[in-house]
Amino acid sequence: MEQLFVIFRKLLKETDTSFFRYKHADINWNNRMIGLTGPRGVGKTTLILQHIKKNLNPAETLYVTAEDFYFAENRLLNLAEAFAKRGGKNLFIDEIHKYKDWAKELKLIYDYHPDLKVVFTGSSVLDLKKGSSDLSRRAVMYHMQGLSFREYLQLFHQISSPAYSLVEILNHKVELPEVEHPLPLFEDYLKKGYYPFALDDDFELRLQQVVNQTLETDIPMYADMNMATGRKLKQLLSIIAHSVPFKPNMTKIAAALSSSRNNIADYCLFIEEAGMISQLRNATGGIKGLGKVDKIYLDNTNLIYNLASENANTGNVRETFFFNQLRAKHEIIMSPVAGFLVGEFTFEVGGKNKGMQQIQEVENAFVVKDDIEDGFLNTIPLWHFGFMY
Image 1 (tube, one colour):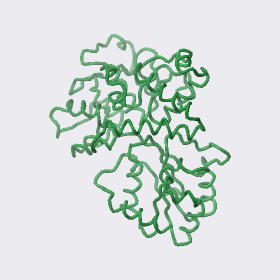
Image 2 (cartoon, helix red, strand yellow):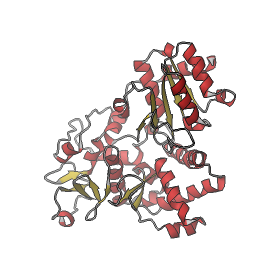
Image 3 (cartoon, one colour):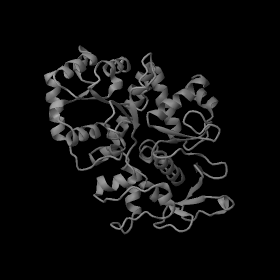
Image 4 (cartoon, one colour):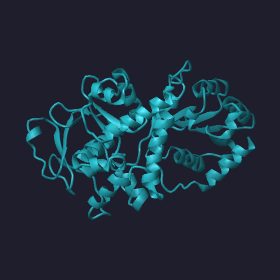
């Protein structure tokens, strides 16, 4: 246990607190048990270490990762008990999905140690109700996605800007006085600005490693898949990457994977929950998992350029960015007359020459144009939607 404290304090000392992800301000850190999910590589570990460094007493706090060899011979429940006896108040557990029976033991920690606050992070595919232990009444869950264009400007270029609501964006409130021409920066963001680790070397290689770990380790571990099924997930993502956005034909995909048609929808949902794809559903359900899937996109534009650069056609990149950024704050579904529907607002996404014909008879409809710096009336620049969080 002493070695865990040594590692924790070393990590804390190395943690930079000059930039905080958007989710830090959204979390109510007073809750007794908090879960933070999100795709690999979006900064969950950094966020919780920053919170500890800025707000908590290290003498009463412990950060561990469930991947540590310590847990090969020791139970998480026993660690929590020993930590509480030493006066511990805040226990942070990273990569919780790597620990067997994590839900059961977190439930027991919550019940046995009411004075201990627990924060855990894990893969997006974490299911609070998996197994017999239901954490949904105990843990308050938050989900974090990758950098917005606004966060990219701050982290990569030290250009600060507030976030704007959707209504403010539609009313042309977005201002970026420090940047005369934002489009070159926006183009760079689309290629390598979604993941914080793009600041480091070998971004393309590291992103491929994130994809491989997600498909070969995270999802199979969660869904109790064998290696052969894990390989089919990679095949499926490859099919999607070279076809998006496309209307899924489950029968053809199943034939290509030599798999049951009934399994394909489950595979797609797992990959979506892990942050690799996004499925645009229609209004029959709307809520994730209920509506009929109309189109499948890669989750973000960085994945397009990394997995299928030859398929990085402009229309695909535009729609992927719009879908990704709006999704962080709003439910977004297919529009029956245009591209997307967000609440009462209809959106058609295109280039600077995109016309109004498709939505001219629709109320609260907007054309979202790429390659323009400023908006007017119901025409909104695409890059403005990168300021939603």
